[in-house]
Image (cartoon, rainbow, N blue to C red; front, side):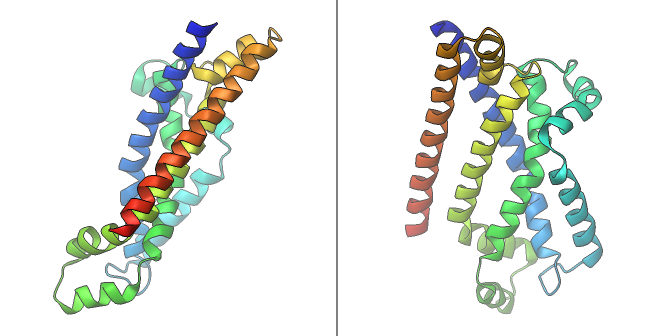
Length: 213
C-alpha cells in the first residue's frame, strides 16, 4: 500500500505542477488583457474586453467533471490518449486558465491607479507600465492567487482520478471506495489535506516576504 500511495502522490504532484505552469502561462496574459483593455485604462478596448470576459465566464461556468468529458477529443489530439496523468493535465489546465485569469484581474485592480498615472506622466509605455508597475506592485497578491489556483487544482486532480486520470483520486476511488478499504481512503484524504496545508503555508510565507520588499 505504501508504494501505491507514494506513486499516486507523485502522480498528483506531477499533474498539479504541470497544469499550474500552463494555467499561469495562459491565465496571466488573459488577466492582464482584461485589466488594461477595460474602460479608462492604458489600452482601453471595449470589444476585446467584452469578448475575453464572455469567453472566460463561459469556461468557468462549466463544471470540471463535464469539461473533463467534453474535451476528450481535444485531449486525445494533443497527447494521443485521454487516460492517465499526462492526459489529465489538459483539462486541468483548461479549467485553471480562466480561473487564474480572474485572480490576476482582481490582483492588478488592487494596484493604486495613481501609481499608473504617475508612470504615464513620466512617459512610460503600456509595456513598461505592465511589467514595471502593475506586476511588481501586485506580486504578493499574485503569489496568493497562484497558491489558491494550486489548491483548486489538487481538488480537480482528485476528480480527474475518478475517470482514469491517475493520482490520489484514482487510488481513493479504485482501492478505497470500490474495495471499501477505509485505510486507503483515509490515507489519501490525509495526504491531500497535508499537501493543501503545505502549499497554503508556503504561499502565505512567500507573499508576506514579497509584501515587505
